[in-house]
Image (cartoon, rainbow, N blue to C red):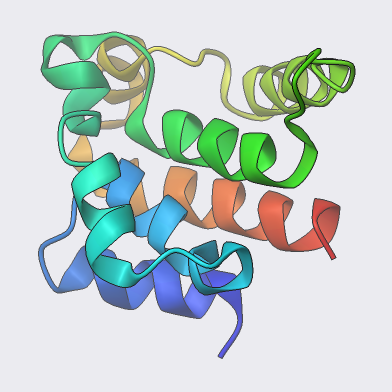
Length: 122
C-alpha cells in the first residue's frame, strides 16, 4: 500500500490530518503507529486553532525524520515543501484552506502531503 492509500484509510478511520500523514511513513523511521498517532495528536485542525494545516505539519515531521540532523543542514527541504504546497493550494493555513474549499478538501491536502513524502523520501 502506498503512502496516499494508507493516509486516506487512516483519515477515514478517524485520524486527524497530521496523524494520517505522519503515520503513513512511521514504520520507515522506526516509529510505531501508536507513537506517530500520539505525536500528531494535537496538530489536527491547524494545531486546533486554524493555523498551519495538519497535513503540512505531518509532512514536515516526516521530512524532519528523513533529513533532520543536529545542525539542521537540510532545512531547505522544509522550505521546498512549503513552497510547493502553497503553490498548489494557495496557502498552508488550515483556516484559509478550509474557507476556500470546505472540509471535503482535507483528503486532497493529506494525499498531496503523503505523496510528496513518498516521492521525496524514497
